[in-house]
Image 1 (spheres, rainbow, N blue to C red):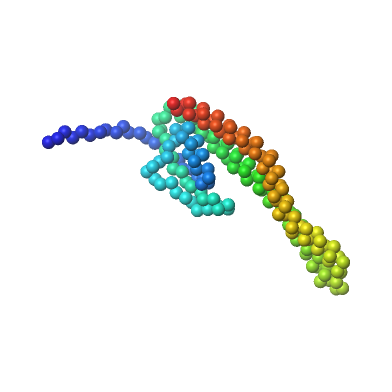
Image 2 (tube, one colour):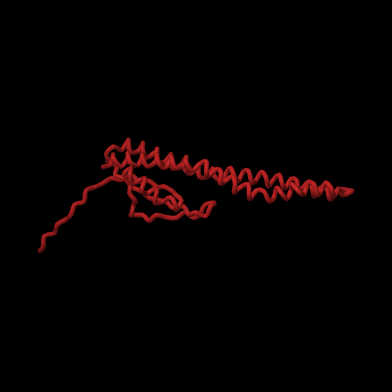
Length: 184
């Protein structure tokens, strides 16, 4: 009979983590988490969770890390800083459109209020045609203006927030660099 040699595989205890992310950010997050000792768990497939408001699918990343990793405390601290920076970037990205949406909605509601006043003026007994026309003009402007107001405000917000977002990406690079040095 032939020699049966068994390869003994060392036991490695893992800790696991699931991270939900937009499909566009998956590669960025995988690269970031690898700097803190995490690797993709190939035992389970990465899954999609449907879609959110902007039709971007969410992907669930399943990660694992050796429980006995060196410098675990410092890596965990750096990882928390990394996650905080990623969340701050998401908030800044949402701020670009949220302020513009608010301004556009206010202008649209004011336009609707003027248009309602115009309708009430024309349906009154006796009809006030001149008042109807005077109220309809800002009403129509209030319905047309939000589109242009939204675009202009998004442009200004993007111009204002882009340097802040870039600073956060630079901070993330420094954090990942420190984490990577602790691993190797």
